[in-house]
Each structure stands twice: as C-alpha cells, then as structure tokens.
Image (cartoon, rainbow, N blue to C red; front, side, top):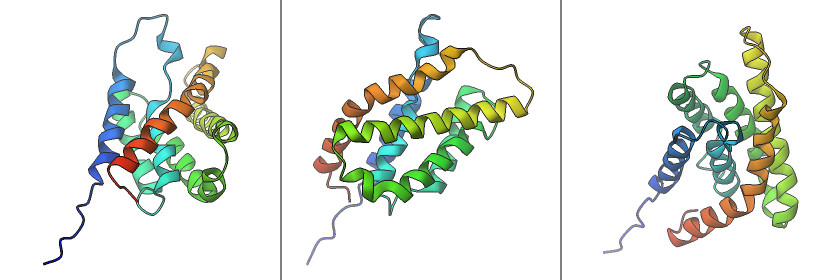
Length: 162
C-alpha cells in the first residue's frame, strides 16, 4: 500500500495566525506607529512561494479578518491585501529568482501600495489624514523582509510545502 503525502497546508494558516497575533499584540504608545505589516509580509511570501495554493481569495479573507481584529474600516485591509496578493501572483516568477537584496525593493513597493490603498479608503470614508509616521511601517517591513523570508523559506522546506 502506497501512502499519500499529508497535506501540510495548515502551516500557511498557522503562520498567518502568528501574523495576526503580532499585529494585535499590545505595544507601548510610542511604538504603536512603528508596527510592521506582519500579515502583509507573510501573505507576500506565501503568494511568492506557493502561488498555486495562495491567491487573491486568501488575501481578501485574510484582510477581512485583519479588519475585524484591528477594528478598522471593514474592507480596508481586504482591498490592500487582495491587491498586493494579485500583484505578487503576477510577479512571483521574477521575484523568486532575484537575490534577497533586490527582492527588498519589490517588497517595499508592495507594502507602499497596501498603505496607499488603506489611506485612500480611510480618506474616502472621511477620516482625517494620518501624520507622516504612517509611512514608516513599509520601511520597517522592508527591513524585516530578509528575516521573514529566511524563516518562512526554512519552514516551507522543513514541512515540504510546494
């Protein structure tokens, strides 16, 4: 009897859960403005690594869950995460072969797009414009990308996700 390989797709959802936890974890008031876009970074990695399993629908659902968890405008993160998931799905073959230091520029643009869409949706709803510190989080996420990439890549290899 030949045994079938087990589906280890739960690893992807487990890492997204860790991203949710890191997003809602309390921080000191001075550090709250510098919170990285954990869920977006994790979603970008999985869209790049296994694009046939993670896509726009997962990005939309993850964004809605993030909206509910953070108490933001419903659909704000859903729009941003689904757009960056789509963009990553279109670019994944190019980005995968880039060295890590070149991937950083693509990740920076994707994180900026997510923040720009969030700013657009809050502005359309009539909320005030945030300060310039709003744009620091894509820079911090970009600086964290090499470590996130290495950790998730090793996890993907250890659990044989493809």
